Image 1 (cartoon, rainbow over the protein chains, first blue to last red):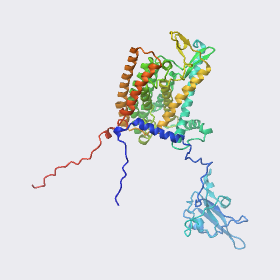
Image 2: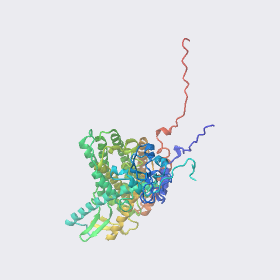
Image 3: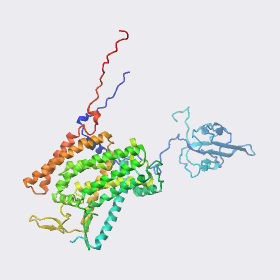
Length: 166
Length: 425
């Protein structure tokens, strides 16, 4: 295939008047100056709608009685590439496993969503939320209670068998 | 109506100095905000609107931030001159306002107060002298920083300001010839007498003056001294905190002064259409004009007239300030050789030729015996209109945009180099 070259038509500098060109440029900027449609998003007031697959702050799903769904199987700390999940499991009288300690370091987390993918009981999720600023660094280690308190919607991860999410 | 005298004159002077200085500083502060907001609007953004209603407290926040920041002094900088430069650059930009009349005279119980700090007889020469002083601060700041970018910025500033001072002065000559005086009060009075503002009978001088004023204040498209893409920020690269702020204040102070000067010289200063507001000290009397038989018509100043004319002056100055900002966010920066070519090859000859044309026209009109008045102005408007047409449509073709390189298109050429004879033949 032949390469086509687009030649820009430039006015001949010998016949161009800079002052008049400048004036037409000023007319253009004036049009934009008067244009009421601005692209700036007024952030705290106007929130961006997050996409369903947005992976942000984690959520721990709970049972109706308030217990975490987590069964302390240990898959998420194993799969976590950033090694940001600390899990200590416990077992009650009936042999039900539950997490004694479940901490996620949101600073270390790379928000890959593999913990949600690997979870057999759909307990840990990444969520559609990003505003997690704090005043101290240790506040970024989310413990179990804090993970259960998160009330933002959790992420719908991409399903290879249903690529268009239908 | 007597001019104010005695102890009250000192009181009035103190109030005027304080008031006008405060006013200029406030306008400078809000010009920085206006620059940011207008630039944002031109780029379809919103600009700073968080501090106070509509962002109106932003300049105060900026000021506080600049005061609290660390003052740095480069280790290799020349300590004395490094500290001295912001002062030298700041003072001329603020004191120039002293000779610009801002409103019609104000009547008080103690006498009539002129709304100008110092009505010095040298008027416009004082402005020119001080505006050329500002370049010393810039050059000194660039040199004392001991930084190559700052140094280059200072060098460019000196070359540019000296070059455009010539065109600035020459375009002023037309105004001075027409007004017959260098005092700004007199220039305003002559525009009132002519019945039209000098922007019309001296349209080409107006255009040349505006362009030169842009170059003098180092604003785009002439901001070679602080060309960000080439020189970081030029002469104030090494400055921080309040010293940097001083450079910014002086830049905006120059803008405000130049705007007020353009308004005074070419748009009638505080003059509003009609003769109701005219006022001028003529042989100890405040007059508003001359009757047909040569007797004077006394003016009667009033507070509302002062207020209205001040509003007119503020509107004209504001127009030029917005023009400054508007042009900054429209036009790209010139190349250095283009700045020099425009200054020396276009502006200087045009200004010189225009001085000749206007001098000839004024001489001709005086010989014919046409009275100083509206028809006098109309004839000059016609002459200047032709000159402006010639300037806008013929003279700047190919000269202003392109530099020397574009004038002669490079033709590719292949020279046949004679092959050296083969060895052994």
